[in-house]
Length: 156
Image (tube, rainbow, N blue to C red; front, side):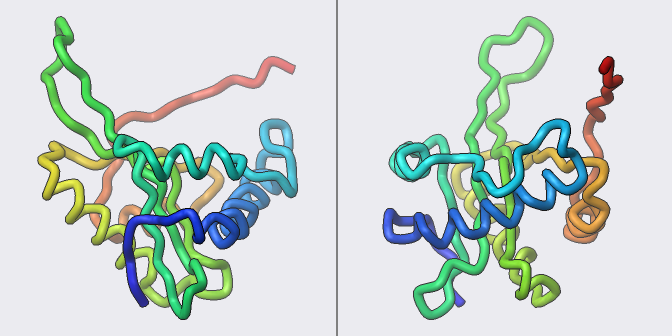
């Protein structure tokens, strides 16, 4: 297995995994997510791959994408009440459904963490849906801890 920055030839494999992730979300929150869709179009994926502030990393085995991490570099500058830090936000991390439990996600995360250290990030952040207990447990296992909580009240 190789972990590297995504290239345009990875788009179809990435889209297959995006579909898996979306359907997990749609199953638990059909009020928010539309089943059998993806978060990004081909053009949006290619734009993200071309932008150094939105790197996508892929785990590839025999030219097949088996996992990914979508990242966003964020920097809060000149805030009146907060420090100027560079953050690597993991927007999405996924491993092929049939390959979960093989520690591929841990290896992708470690690659992302090493990248964040190399470019001088203060920390790594991400969001996890409350219903996604497996993802929550995975992130705790690899050393992440809650930083803040988003709460909701549905009004309909």
